[in-house]
Length: 511
Picture 1: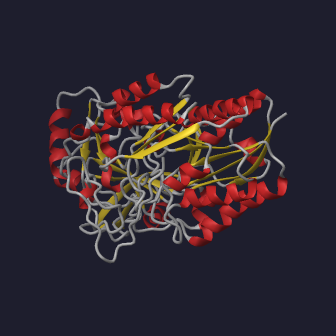
Picture 2 (picture 1 turned 90 degrees about the vertical axis):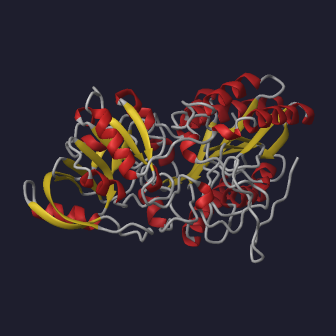
């Protein structure tokens, strides 16, 4: 019976965001399951849409003995603190070192983690694991579609396998794919040759959606290119808000021969680069988006849904900017709802005031985003919640959610979800848990970029993308980059990055 060490450590780092990821954020988990260690990992990671859960289910079907270390994840934000990184990485590495010997190691990682002391968070973890297990033991990793894959990650892993959907409805499926590839490695007792390439332009996250052109077609072609000679091929559009040399989209493959793998990478990279101009689209100002939504709603039978993309807590935003709320109020929108605004103090004040009471608040706007400020107004408290509920939609996949003390506040014809914890609004239950029925609204404003589509597209008349102030600009060229690799274009067909003299940017090619 093969004996496999497993673990998970996930964080998507926006180095331009206002708030860092501390150890307590991983303990809570945000929109992820709470931190779990040891044997409890096998109990918690079941029947949910997480890579490690998918791997565990498939591994148990193979009859493998699994030795869990830790699962820890936190909502995207700025750098992972050195304290959090070292405490969690130590559990993984020491757990593998002390509980061996093993036949293989599987890790569920994000691929876009930047810590206070390591630009390439995952590359460093894989280096440490490889140092413990030696060069011969298989090390297989599942990655997020937004991974900023680096040469160090490719070098230390025997296989990196990335999600293929955004919204990420295939996280568990990717864990299962990693288990299948590991089974192949164990059965054939041979490694596959690697090929890797980074692409020359950053891709805005709003246009990475795999249900739309051009990304949908690219992934269809990718799947058709896999074969017995190239059993796994991945395309990561990347997370374009991590200011280090490895940031950006990449393609990587594993083949029977180096020629097989390189040919697949070259072909797929050419397909992606031929669509460079298509990775762009219309972004509305807050007033443009609200005015258009109000006009469409006059004849619509379903809600018009606006993505408040720049304050997406799934991309490093604090989910507390007020630009879209101001636009709704300014344009006198009715039957409108926005969520979730993260403001523990306002949620506490609402609970103290009670249902039906007026409450004067300085709502949101506390993360210091340029062009944003708290929204000072008197609201009516409509409903209160302890913040605990299940999110059954395709993205969260039945996860237990804890948004902390929460409230539905009303101002004129607008309802506001206010929470004490952050998670992007990617499930209809995130309106319902405070008494708002999303299907009955004319306009919904979601603090999300793409993940909300999985559960909201079926109920939407139309989807609009708006750019109110936030930590994750819809246009990556607007970010103050200093450490990218020279020459990468800051957006599709955009200007090339030129490193300032003080930059630490560097890049080492592989393959």
